[in-house]
Amino acid sequence: MAGRSFDPLRALRAKSLGLLRMPAVLAAIVAFGFAVPAFAKYDIDIDAPRNVKSLLKDNLDISRFAKRDNVSDDQFQFLVTATPKDVRDLVATEGYFSPVVRTDVTTVDDKRTVKVSVDPGPRTRVASVQLHFIGAVTTEDRTQENAARFAFSVNEGDPFTQSGWDDAKNAALRALQSKRYLGAKIVRSQARINPRARLADLSVTFDSGPTFTLGKLDVSGTKRYPEWIVEHVNPIRPGEVYDVARINELQRQIQNTPYYASVAIDVDSDVNKPTETPLHLKVSEYPYHSIRYGVGYATDNGFHVQGAYSYLNTFGAAYPFTISGRLDQTQQYGRVQLAMPPDSHGWVNAVFGSYTLTDVSDTNIYSARLGVQRSRSRQNIDTTFSLTFYDDRLTQNEPNPSTARALVPAWTWVRRDVDDPLFPRRGNIVRAEAGFAVKGALTDQTFARLYTNALQYVPLGKNDLLVFRAEFGGVFTTGPSSGIPASLLFRAGGANSVRGYSYLGIGNNVSGSILPTKYMVTGSSEYQHWFTHDWGGAVFFDIGTATDTWSERVFQPGVGVGARWRSPVGPVNVDVAYGLKNKSIKPYLTLGIAF
Image 1 (cartoon, rainbow, N blue to C red):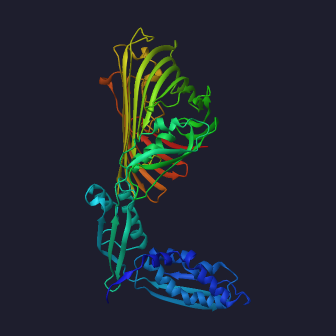
Image 2 (cartoon, helix red, strand yellow):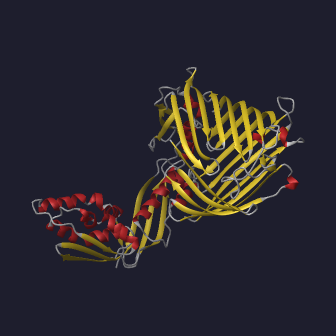
Image 3 (cartoon, helix red, strand yellow):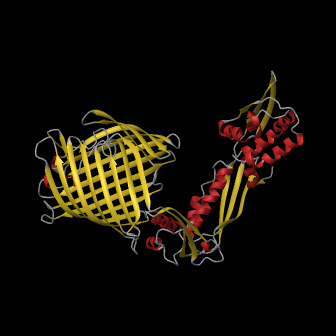
């Protein structure tokens, strides 16, 4: 049997019978007339392999109409007659082009049952894939051609499905359009099906069109706040080669400011005007006054409530003023901040004051802070320079609370390079901090402080994931740890540290109080398997230590299992861990809901 061309539009029409064949069904119903008395509802039984049964159940007209009680006898006969063709059209979208279909109608006590038996036959597989490119990409940037080829996800030997074929073409086109070639398009697409050989030959031709460069911003929607705020955080310069990553960066930069609730960016894709194409940007602004609040729960610190009030037009000059706070079973926190709008290089200057009261592991730490900071967010990197005065008091089981003060210049750097900010599967998150203080400059004791934390996500196939975490903190000084503000020292233990141990329960044990220490190291490795898109399980191993004297360090390991849920509002983790050193079992639950 000679090969024949497979019409993708016909296949899509078959797959969407619920929408596209409805007019034909309604026409038939009208033709037969509504005057015919209604017949009782009928039952439908679909006997087919699992991989096509749900497709037929959801899309066959005779299945969808089964729950209606106003189907006349003539209408019923029409549906039965049309069923074999409907089945063939539907299973063709899944690569089955020679199905055997049988429909049987039985009547018992005026109750009809329709049994649709389907043997889809052998599945058609992809015999060849040919991707052709024309346009500027063939001479200017072959890396974009390679990116499009890599994004095309259907390979020789794969089962042929209409959805997979369409997804592969669209993914390749998006990859080609993502850089330089915004006006790229598909100019020819064909899937040739040989039903007898059960083979599909696929071919697509992409036209890249010319290279696009970016022009000036066309901003609309600014009413409350100056338009120059958008210009100050805009990382794009006119004449740059079009890159969707730069457009996304622009959107993130604007949304990182406190002024805008939403940002929409549209880039002209006229292939006849590719040079300095305009960027149309529409913003929706927050009101001057806003209140945000949320609740949550975590095993480490129990239920928490948090909230913030902001006024975004202090002095009538778009200076954001914010009061925020959080309260849970182990900590109270409050902060007041007055910031400036971003300057011409995107830097934001601010002054702040805060207090934190932490009461855990028989240790009470009160920390008051006053400082100034200069920060900037660029693409996936946040940078902050700060000068903060700390005034801390530590109370423990032994008498005589200790106090410590320090004026600390510090630098903080955070890089987020993950595929999904809420549910990452690939990439890493790195945080680094460095600071110092000099005795006599509003400081009780000279020291230097370093801290770093890294998370690495490594996907294993479609359903498995490895997560690695490493953390180090150190305060380097010649004096005792009591001369350092306690909030700058370290403890370990808990859901986000070493599981199997109490929250901040690893440190310097003095008369039952777990005091913060100069040095801290923790690490974790976790293997996740996702049974469905939203539900998964995990096994993990954690280890860590916190000590004042590195030569006397004692590492505390823990192992455990857990459940993972991708909830609509964020990840939910339920873990049970066993501390190998303290020989205790501890459960952990972390979740949060923000309003």
